[in-house]
Image (cartoon, rainbow, N blue to C red; front, side):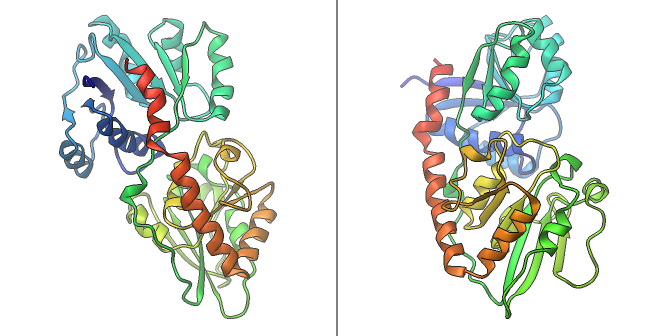
Length: 340
C-alpha cells in the first residue's frame, strides 16, 4: 500500500476533546501507513511532542505557505480558521478537512465555508451532523463525511477498582461553565449509600469558571470532596480512583464525549443525559445509564451503590462495548476514502 500523507493544522494534547481526539487519531493514521506532518498553531505540550516523534510523525514550524498543495486537516483549531485567509493567499491546499468538535458554528467557519475554503467537513456523530449541516447548507452546498473517532484502548490497562469501604463518584471536564450543571453538588448530595459505605466525590477540571456555575460545595460533611484544576493530575489517576461518573453538562450539548469512552476503558460506570450524542454511545442498563433528570441520575447512582454486582457487570460490559465502538477498521473506513 502506498503511503498516504496528511498535514495537521494543530497539535495533540491531553486536555480537551479536540486535542485528545487528534492524539488518538495519530495512532490510527500511523497504524494504516499515513505519513503525518504536524504544524503547531499555538502552544505545544513537550510530552506530546516527544510522543508524536516516537510515533514517526514530523513537526514543522508554521508559515503562511506551509499547506500549499497539501491535504490538511484541523480539529476545531480557531487559530487555523483565523489564518485561513493568509493560507489561501499564499497557496491553496490540495484539500482542507475541518472538524468542528462543538454543536454550533463559529463565525470564521461560516465565512470560510461561504468562500469555499473548506473542502470537506468531518462529523463524529449523527447528532452533530444533523445539528450543523443544515446551517452550513443555508450558506452553500456542503461536502461532509461521517467519521467514527478512534480511541486507542490499548493504552489503558483493563482493571476494575475494588470497593474499599467507599463509593467514589466523580466527573471530569475542562474548566468551562458550559460543561458544568448548576446543580452538580445537589446531584452528588442526593445519592444515598447503604450502611458501611462512605461517599467520596472527585472532580477533575474544576476551576474558577466552574465555580461560578455550580457555587461552592456543601460543607455539611455529607460527602468527602477532592477537586483539581485541569491537568493537575493525570486523567488515568482520576478514573482509577472512581467507580461511577455522573456527567451532566451545562449547555455544551455533547457532540460525542470522549470522557465517556475513557470511563468505559477504565472500568467506570457512566451516568449521562438522555440526549445529544449519548444515545449513540450508551446501551442503557447494559454499558451505562442515561437519565432524563438530575434526580434520576442520583437515583441510578444510589441503585448502583446498593448493588455492587450490578455495578461490576455494567462496568465490564462497558469495556467490551468500547472495543466495538472503536474497532480500528471501522474507524479507518472514513479516512480511507478521504485519503485516496
